[in-house]
Image (cartoon, rainbow, N blue to C red; front, top):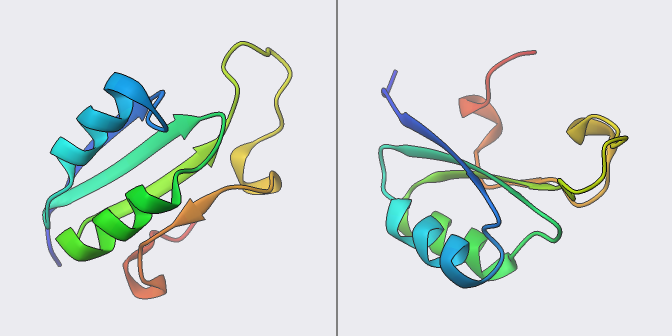
Length: 86
């Protein structure tokens, strides 16, 4: 089993957050991003780097959001065998 560093990053779909997300992508990284909209290009970059990326579509300015698994827009680049059971 490979040990991965976990980073949780908000605002990763644009601007400084997107730049930081790209800098964090590496083969030993599991990156969880929270942003209003998933960024498909970030998923492509994660696959190219061998990183695990989960993008949760979430607006942090609202206080009544459902859990991420029940919302559309949540994506992952992790192969099914590397995801943790819930």
